[in-house]
Length: 174
Length: 49
Image (cartoon, rainbow over all chains, first blue to last red; front, side):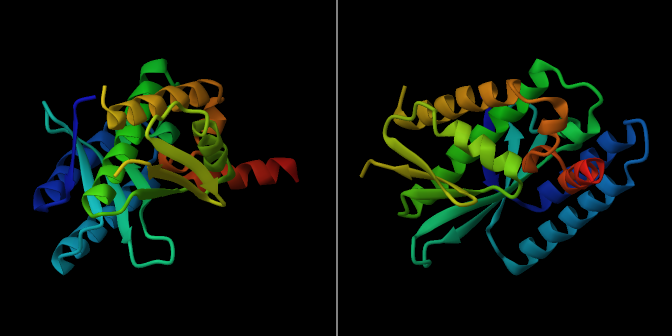
């Protein structure tokens, strides 16, 4: 995996405007729903930057600087159960499953690599802020089922469990 | 391999396996894979009704 995870910047907004709409335009069919979704994402990024907030991050390919996803990670250190929370990942249109007629193995591998990198990176954000726990939110029952599959993963040094709609990844180290 | 790398690698193996066992319709209902998961969920409800 050759990705980078960093806070969004004005460059991120420029990247979405220049590349993500172009990706949609190159696909067949009516994708006005997705265009609207990307417009909302751009507006949210701009608002976040203007407010100086730090809960939106970008995942890019290190070599090409291609913007692959936007990740929402919030600081919940002050909650009763201190953690950071990975709430949502917004993939670029070329990676979206609902824009594909056919899904190939390499498509699945690409999104798996990005998702797991996002989880690892979000946990690193948490630990660098003195918190050992990352919670990942699942909205659909399919997502919850996916979380249950991840409980079987080999993760020495980390404990995984599911609490309701949350996958909890906790570092066991110091 | 450090534990952090093992974590990501372990999650990737488990996620790859889980995704490979899903149909395209099921993949389209995974939150992060689909901008319009609601559409597919509602479509299934209508089909079932």
